[in-house]
Image 1 (spheres, protein in one colour):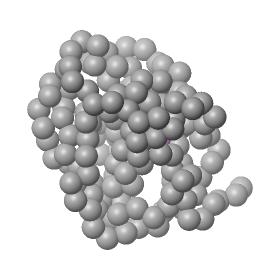
Image 2 (image 1 turned 180 degrees about the vertical axis):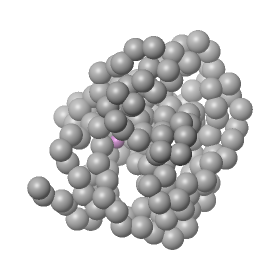
Image 3 (image 1 turned 60 degrees about the horizontal axis):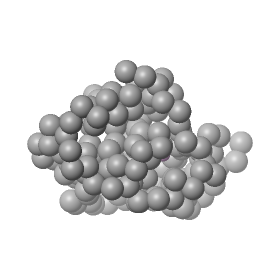
Length: 150
Ligand code: NI
């Protein structure tokens, strides 16, 4: 495992759309292991592959209730809304209030290609939405309805 550099805002890669993962091989597992280590090292709750410069639909998340890996994730249902503070490892020092669904269900493959369904509420729902946005080149500041200035 290795800690990779986190891409910061200003790098045009963050606006690009990530491609689907087709091969569930050693290269993917290496990427996942590195992303996991990088996320924990940065004290993040989620990380998308584009944030380490890889345009693949891969996300790792740990909102305090366990580590999960999402490959080719898609939101299959969402309900309600929440207005909470968000930040991003690629935008250090920036935060703002976003509007996100209160509850989301995500369908994704695991590192072996098996499809699973995950449910997220509160922080986890925000995290799912935030990380999946990264896969489509969207950063949270595009969703901010109220900026927080320190
Ligand atoms: Ni982010």
